[in-house]
Length: 153
Length: 132
Image (cartoon, rainbow over all chains, first blue to last red; front, side, top):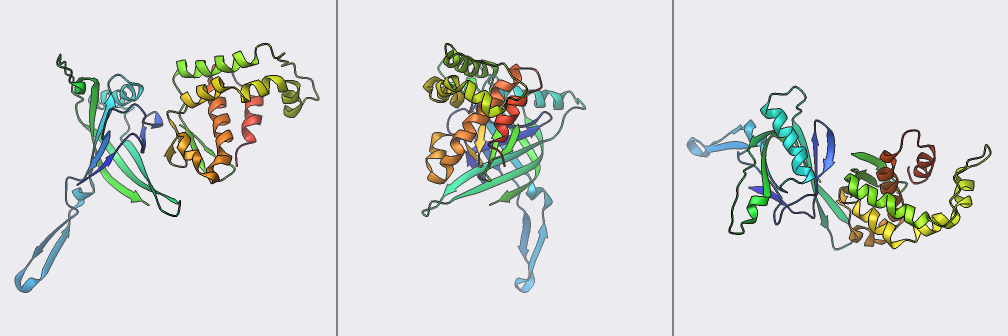
């Protein structure tokens, strides 16, 4: 299960330098927030008894970001990535704030925001060279895993 | 990121544009002021209003300029108004239109401000007219 975002949505990240709004997007789905773990484990016992337990890792979200290679946003996220890799004390786990605006027939707009906390870089942006016109070679794909999230509507 | 609360109660978030974009805006404003007889001398009894009136021709040139408007729009790539990324469509809604000029003015001021040393008394005074 994942939330997908396009360049029309408002994507903001807070890193060790403060907040910034992403704008250097690649094509199509530019950000995806996946929930890879279930929030609860449920089973059925004898006589149909319900057995359930919280699964705390179910709070985690995995963000995949597709940015234009060497853009301003790519450079900024690369700084965070490098700080983490080098165990630099200036590193701060990132926070993301992604908003989708949902328009209603009466003209009102609802902001559907997902805030994710304590994000660490878990994937390495791949570098590739391709002579057959593969545009993926000019896209930097970042993967961050967040410990917790909150949806605000 | 700079955060402002507009008089309408809507939140405006501004990221400063890259230097080339900010410089293009500054130059677009200068081009419009050129030849308009800009008078930036400040007397003891001058107010912001009297300064603006003294330079009303330059002000009108800047406000009516298509090039300045386009240069400000170029600085809006990372501007978020009421949790929505800046597009002209956002201001198509009648109730948002009153925030269009304040938004443009704040984006322009914040992108020009870094080119100059503190204090920015005039810029701060103009800016305060649009904030809650």
